[in-house]
Image (cartoon, rainbow, N blue to C red; front, side):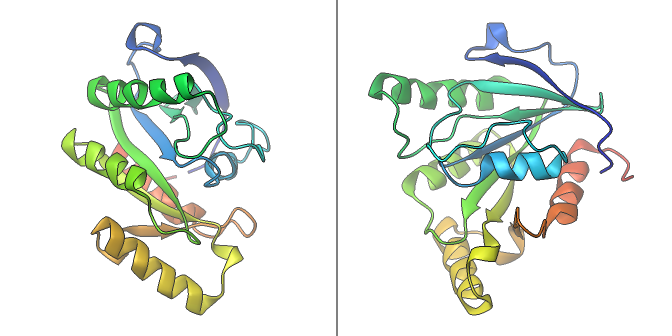
Length: 197
């Protein structure tokens, strides 16, 4: 996809504050520190559209961005071991489940996994939520430049087995080399039903 414009719309925690559902939406979800911000920034060809941080859990709201005036990119809070107050952490689950279950213009969710980690119970729960609500997942495995070819093959088999998915469902990505960018866009465009550029 040729990115012509990307603009921040607003942040929200509940449906009353979401932007009007005028454009189709693609959301991005994953554990804290999985490389979500880097993936989004590379996809939209912007250095700092979303803030990358060495401190997990920086995204604590649902952030909406208009891309090309044709769809909305939604950055969901990272889940997992983030160093945030427990009270904030407890709100994330209901906040994300409300968004996933009620947003009628949500076309798909890019679920991000780290090639070096075995998927957690939270990753499996997120995938179960998506399936339960009829939302199509796009499974993206990040940080692929950080492992050898053999390790990558071994880890991707483990990820597919743990999540009970066909290995062909996994898209591989490296923020360093930009590997996988076109393939991920192709999957997103298919869900948006936009003609490819």
